[in-house]
Length: 226
Image 1 (tube, rainbow, N blue to C red):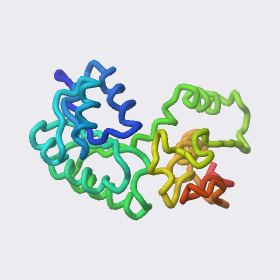
Image 2 (image 1 turned 45 degrees about the horizontal axis):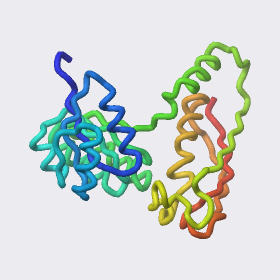
Image 3 (image 1 turned 30 degrees about the horizontal axis):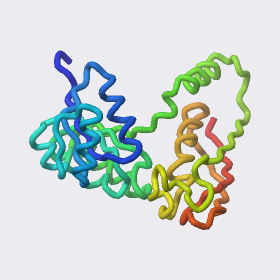
Image 4 (image 1 turned 30 degrees about the vertical axis):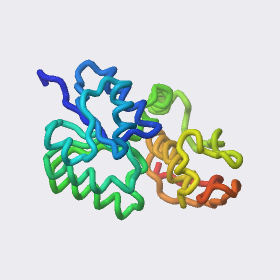
């Protein structure tokens, strides 16, 4: 591609800062606009990362900017509207995880993109981190021997006490599904990358912190095809 990739984005929440900075770091990308329902918040973020224009509606932004790619940095409840808007205009999409509010909805979102013939990419980044790439290389090279099992433990650092998540992502407290749906999905995908596809699952979920609506503790065992 001789010209720069034209990118626009929707969202101005906590994790959007990493997306905007990432796009600014790529010389081959021109991020020209963003959309946010709270215009003042969107304008502040745009000023911080040098994004020229701010809109209140995704559809208007897509029509005016005519981008190559829409980066969706919002919550799953908005994905259908934004993916459909991009699909109707033939615009590629990169979308945050969790990808949809249910498996059925995720399938429908993929179908929208397939019918429009647009690329649709889920922004699941852990498997691309260099230490996991190196681990996969060592496994493939036989340096670790035959892999029979792997164990992993996780304790969210900001999910404790009455103020859990309020400083960063306060909506976490109200999510009916939390630990697996929002956080553990990173490592579930990473182990798929390292080991293979999942054949069977056993899980026990529970809630420890009473201020959180969803589960914040889990015991999960995967059996893999490999």
